[in-house]
Image 1 (cartoon, one colour):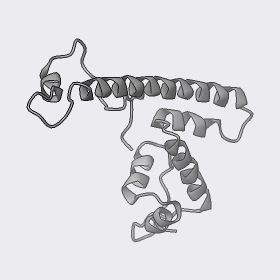
Image 2: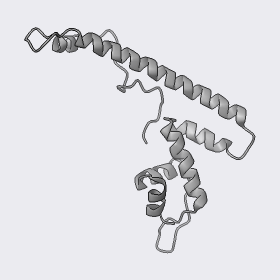
Image 3: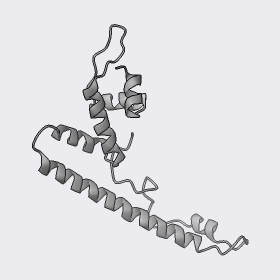
Length: 145
């Protein structure tokens, strides 16, 4: 199947498939004489695996590690990797809860539509620490796709 068919079959953007190839998550497929990429069922299955990992918010390094463990008796390693990822998720939950508290405190500064609403003044005040680079406190290093 060609890349457009693979994209439709897996619900993956063509650019994302190409990105996964560049990242080495998908092997470069053979090409026709006209230069079209040709994929097989194994590629579709691998792409489904990658997409499932990504839907669980795993970064590309984690996906790569899990792909390397496929086909062998590596349950302990997969378990450890998942434990580490659960730690990332827990850290993000904590960061989101802190963000929620900060927003609620900011909202509490305003009690109506009047000119005395303190939200804008609260936003103008510098914070002691800089906010995380992502509004959800991303704990992963590579979040491109």
